[in-house]
Image 1 (cartoon, rainbow, N blue to C red):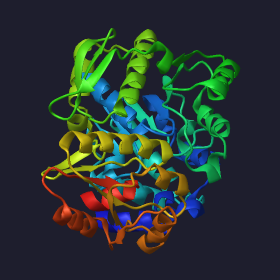
Image 2: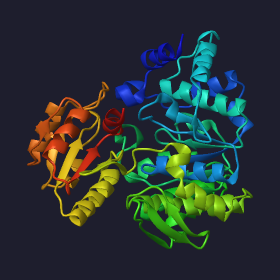
Image 3: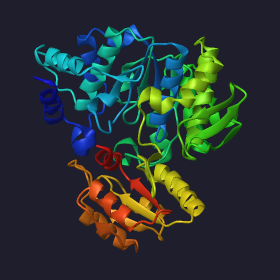
Image 4: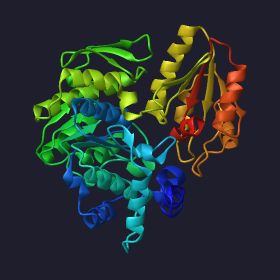
Length: 428
């Protein structure tokens, strides 16, 4: 098989949650352990940082990877899902895995006689671990796919576990309440491995404290430590920050919600230094300043046009979209323009509460992504009407964005989002 045929096989033969939803969800670590044994435990050949949570784990993972890379460590980064290119999921020092390596791994698996039936995520994860081991990375930053306790990535024993925050998402799998979800996310806390939690309070905080106590390890809450002293919008769209840990620095990422992620990263760096991982100010400054450039991160309050200002963002649940809608409101107020929102969702998302967060004074362009799991735009229109919001239907995100651009004035703001896959289709 060539590379294109290999991708077709991966997408077609293996169940892929991001495309098909619940039918592809495989809770439990049995297959991951079996694959790990078959490929001779590649994750044991490098050190790792494990990043879970509901929102912000992708941005957090990229920032930590950029800082480790800037320190001179050969750094692997495994994240999901991808936006445009499958190989975005697996990077070393920002460079995507070679197409030949993808083909070779799938051929090796196909020819092996392995009798198990891994999911797309399980096999892709093992591809990443195998690649990182073969290339002898010093550290790999591993993003949790879903949950934590039963997530495929939870076979690793990292140097540090990070949990960004807890909010409602994937409730059909992780639990209906925040404490139930926190219990699943806390499953990545391991014996003797320190843990950093970005933000938690009340019963959620108690869940993490109890789990850390059971594991006999330390836990640090970033929102208690608060290492981020200052964080204000920069003229280039990023953020100008200051911390006792490293002084003044600039972050290439923009958006108010990144303040919480940066605070979490700084707390994680505090712990990483404490356990002996060498990271200096220059590495923090460079990593933050060039996080998107160094790691290829895209889709986080990402400016794609200036006039009218056009932003895309992958926030897709109640908490994530709450932050981005607040940011959109501030941006439109600052420019004195109107809001144009290109939006779509996946079909298994509970969107009624999300729709209530959306501004009533915006113009809506309803669309759907090119995956089987997408909610048809016609059904989304009905949902919006139930909430008293009108919207026009478009076949795909690019047509919707084109219509928004035609209707918008120079000082208006166009927002594209609602689903990672809406952003992916637009950027492709």
